[in-house]
Amino acid sequence: MKKRLVVLTGAGISAESGIKTFRDANGLWEGYNVMDVATPEAWESNPTLVQQFYNERRKQVLQAKPNDAHFTLAKLEDDFDVQIITQNIDDLHERAGSTNITHLHGVITFAQSDKNSSLLYPIKGDEIKMGELCELGSQLRPHVVWFGEAVPMIETAAVICEAADLFLLIGTSLAVYPAAGLIDFVPHQVPKYIVDPNIPSVNHYKNIIKIEKSATAGLKEVYNILKANA
Image (cartoon, rainbow, N blue to C red; front, top):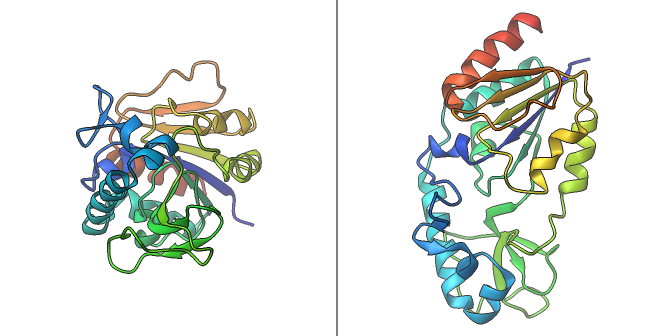
């Protein structure tokens, strides 16, 4: 039986593929206040702007390519039962070859019904157009969890974390909840590798191995450690 390696990834792993982090120090995302483009209220007040914003983000994602960190995670499936939980809305893990991925905040390459969020549709091309409707007759919107919306996959992710034999955190500041709380579900005795140039405060957790490097460099180091002990 392969050991179960649970990996929680954040914006830092996609940043090295040229995808800008969700929001920078001034609270803006690609020049927009996130409250104007990433809330149900924004969608209700100006759906055209929100649709346009995510169409542009989707084009960026489709132009980006997986980096070495994504490929290293895929390669770890040779020796481990790798379960990736990602806060990212891109599909770079899939394109790198990883097979078990739980998206907490949706996937930007899919559309969902404005009326029923469980109705999902792959997007043809790179845009959702205003006037494109789901089978219930309502407007299609990005398959993205906005501020103020429930995170439907969080309970599934918690169960995955509870069954971890090894845990790896990459490129996340543990600032966005409920995703940040997932580490609390990992058993105390499980080794927890944290890869980030600026490692968040985790002193109250046991069995922490800190690697203060970028996602690609840090994951290479973790890969060698895990392979040696597989």
